[in-house]
Length: 84
Image (cartoon, rainbow, N blue to C red; front, side):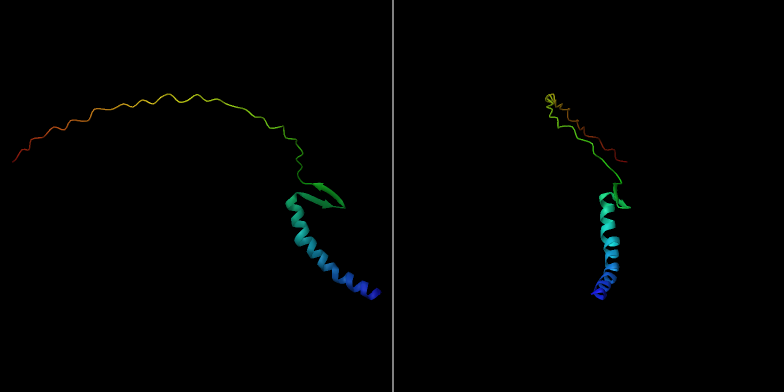
């Protein structure tokens, strides 16, 4: 039985190391958690409590009526041609 336990423990060592380095460490870093010496601490902690939402109503007056100005059309005067 001792040989089986030793063989299983020897086989699990590299697998556990790979899971730690390739899965757990990137996951914990993405979550902002640092684990060291069996202590868990956060890299960044934001426990601020958000104030309750405030509803406000703003009344905006309608825009002033638009004014359209019609400009007189330019007058085209015939020009005389001078032949040389």
